[in-house]
Length: 243
Length: 209
Image (tube, rainbow over all chains, first blue to last red; front, side, top):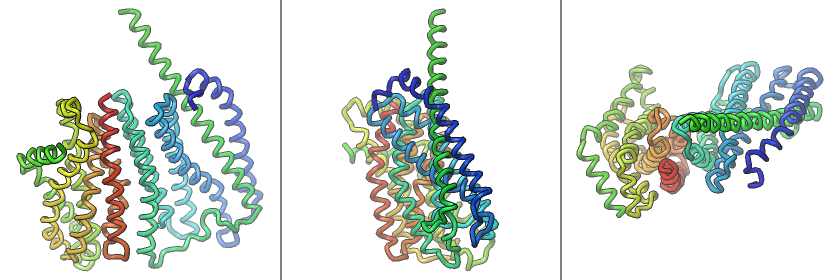
């Protein structure tokens, strides 16, 4: 891991990886969405609207996985003081937050035709909403910190968030079972284990494609952040040369 | 040293009773806002009373965030304590206890007043829940204060930080009457109170570098 702490070495690898990841990601995503939108069968219950699943499920997966990645990067930054880890965390955060937002919005659009409502306080939806708030808190704190010149507060927040996340998810499930009442059973939403193979293939393609795109975007953001650091350092050197 | 710090913080807080009363007044005011918003229907108010009181308590815990830690960081008191060999964790734990004592006990006294405004729900389970849950709220407020000490816009930022993390306390606190609710609330509080001094100290340490 510390082999990649050298920004120059990391940049060499990142430069080589970025374009293939982007193209492969776009290709897989396009394939998955094409098959999903045109070639796969409609759901026997939900009809055509099930096709939103091919965007909704990868977005949910990447939103949750992104937060885990954010927490791991923050932990590496705090414990090992790995110089690139904090840059990685700051690169991941907006992308993960965007995917979480896409998951929530696509879910709301899916909910309207299937359940008749844009939003329902189901355990899974509520947990996703809380995840978005955790992301937003991290983004706000890290940008406020960046103004002041950096620090570890945002990394600490990410770790506290990931520790609390199982507690929050459990509490939301517990709360949901208390107020079950006449709420809707969501057995059809999201990929169930008895999914038809014609639907499974485009779903997997879509998940793989979006994941690769996530990685490509994070690499691009990290390269941009390192470039900004280099520019700032160079400006300081030039300014110092004139004093 | 720990109890010395607690006594000092409490003495400082008591020196300005107006600041002490602020969260309490805010608590009653926030609870009183809801009847204006949803109408004076007594049945509705009674049904939502426990939730409203918990939300009001949560918001009241957030009020003093900007003055919890930032002044001590800014005027050098924290640096003085550290050079004397005080562990930041001890400082954080002492500040947690003092903060809890200064806002939770008056809150419990004000609970009947706010409760009456909302139709007097069963106060005993609410009081018990608040007693167990407010240490967690105090801990989260302290954590937010340490994370945002010295940052601009710290107050709003602190709210955004605290609220998602406080959800379990809120959920279990309102559900105290349900089977297992009290134990779950205690568990959530214990986890939060245990983690906070270390996280808060790490945040203070990173701000001091």
